[in-house]
Length: 334
Image (cartoon, rainbow, N blue to C red; front, side, top):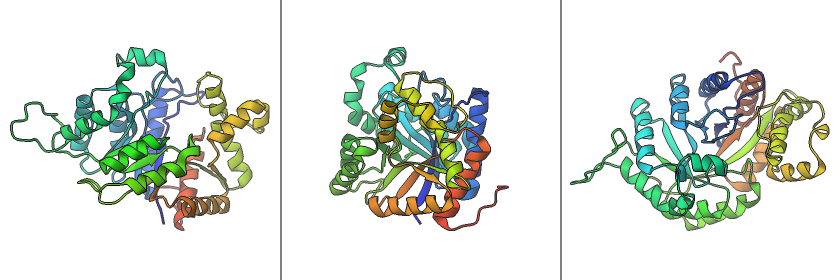
């Protein structure tokens, strides 16, 4: 069985608020913990009314307090928005509170728009120094060297595992050169998946953190008791992608009966490309979809995005995914 993990978007839903979104994420993480998922990540986004994880390290602290075993992390921190020293302190604090359970995925996109980028007080060209920033951050998390005057406290010596995130071959090449695990965002950018994985595996150099390549692939999976029910749940995500294309970012919407009444033909085509690798259906459809994907790409791990409006339906989706992928009966009371 391939390892299964979760990326939670910490959605603010229509009729809800930020507090409810954060509590729902914590509840979902506890559910995933009981089901046996490997890790639970949240991502940094800014100036998006429908996503509540902008303060990513704070969000993870809230989530971690409600879990026992599952690894927790950022998928990811957009490093150009921050001084590496600050991120070392934040994630060093998390690693001190929850030892052996914290991951740090790093991306070089801003995770926001130009207005918010300016508000973050970061140089627009800072993405160009992403490889150097990764190495600087890694050094702050390593054991202190003799004579080292600047130390991240907390952070120093925690050696929080770093991941490189990507939706192109740039991240794949960097992860390979640095000997780090690689997570590809095929849940919204599937076109470059195979070239990126091939580059990562062929160019990988072992490191102190990782002896051989480890590739995790993000994939949208929405499971329900029937194909029809799952397709209806999936309209929430389809509407979100349509809104993104319209530059009308809003709250997560309840599912609708017919998505064709919502998106235009052009939006359907563009959103369809971004969601091309989605797996949507009842248990048998999901099992077949996951099996086929794993055979095709040979991923070491799948990071599941189950973007569903209703919390109980999300919990049910994660239960069915684990049951169908692992062949294990799941206790819905967990």
